[in-house]
Figure 1 (tube, helix red, strand yellow):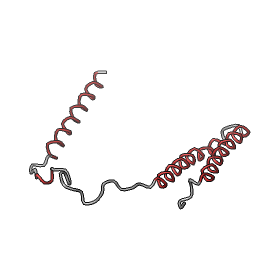
Figure 2 (figure 1 turned 180 degrees about the vertical axis):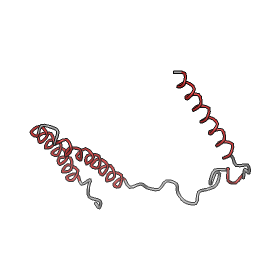
Figure 3 (figure 1 turned 180 degrees about the horizontal axis):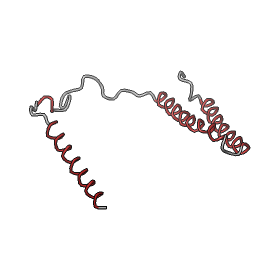
Length: 117
C-alpha cells in the first residue's frame, strides 16, 4: 500500500513537471499584433459568408450514414451464427433484413435516393 502511494505521488509530480516545462518552452516570446488579431475582424468580407447548402446532399449523407451503421450491425451476424441456435438466428436475421429492405424501398419510393429532381 505504501509503495502504491509513492508511485502515485511520483507519477503526479513527474507529469506536473513535464506539463510545466512544456508550457514554458512552448511560449512565443515575440507577439505580433497582426498575427494575434482575428482574421478579417472589422473589415467587409470579400464574399458572402452564407453560402447556400444543398439539403439534397445532406439527406443523401444521412441515408448513407444510416445504412453504413446497419452494415456494421450485419457483419457480426455471421460470427454469431456458429454459436447460436440456427432457427432463432435465421428468424432474427430475416426480420432485420426485411426492416432494412422496407426502409430502402420507402426511401426509393419517396425519391430521396435520386440526386437529380
